[in-house]
Image (tube, rainbow, N blue to C red; front, side, top):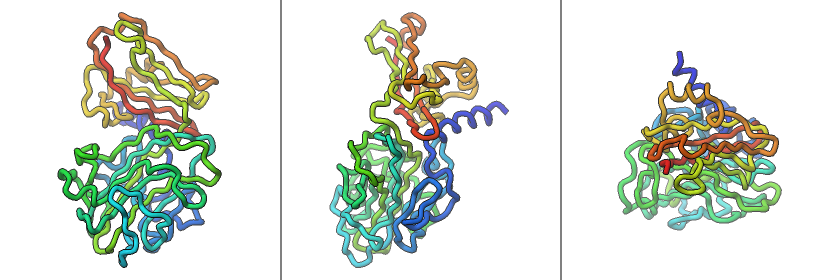
Length: 349
């Protein structure tokens, strides 16, 4: 009974911090200008059924605290018109005949974004350069800055072997994960993470997050991309977990410039990294009894920010023994502006 309760509490916090893709039923996104309940719509490619909400498990999907994710299948360019350059970006405008795209509105006041992503490559070829990309686009369809995340088949071709897991969605030619390639970084058997990426400012009205998966030169093999656990936050929002004054100083734990009166969860494991930073609870791998103790203890493991969006909790020197290893993470959430901070590891000095 305790384990389901603890898992529910931890995943509920993560789900609140990453609300996108959880409110729509499994199936195709509506075709723009129609949108779903979260304001997300797809361009009309391949009958628009190539951009879908999925819940199939595999390759680390859905992510911790998530139950569904967006899946984009690369189809459309059967006449060789797109010509995606190695390393990107995908040419714009990439019309409905050349790329599958979903458009995520950027909430007012949001200046940062976090998400997980993966590209499943079915081509493994320089010639047929399928690609996946997440980028900021203005209301005219023009890029605002460089892509936030990008991967293509030509970059993968000739590199170290990609990961071994396959696209969990039932497609004719399921691609292989690319995130495990050492030359581009990544996680074996799980999606890549973008944490607290600072969006360009100021953003003009109508700007949005464009998530695209494009098929280059042929339409024989369809690669795919996924995006999951999307959350938006403010530019100055920060989480501190460390000895800012150096060895012998207090352990400073704090949240600043966050949404006011917002709940947070801060799981911590002691001398037990496990699968950190890919643990089951916001990246931390801790046993159920430890999590329950932390939930019952209260701050700094669970609590809320004050009216100014802050929370400060210094731990005096000597309370924690020198050499203790701490792995921690933090998710802060409210209905409008939520953040999942990057997990961190420290050793008390």
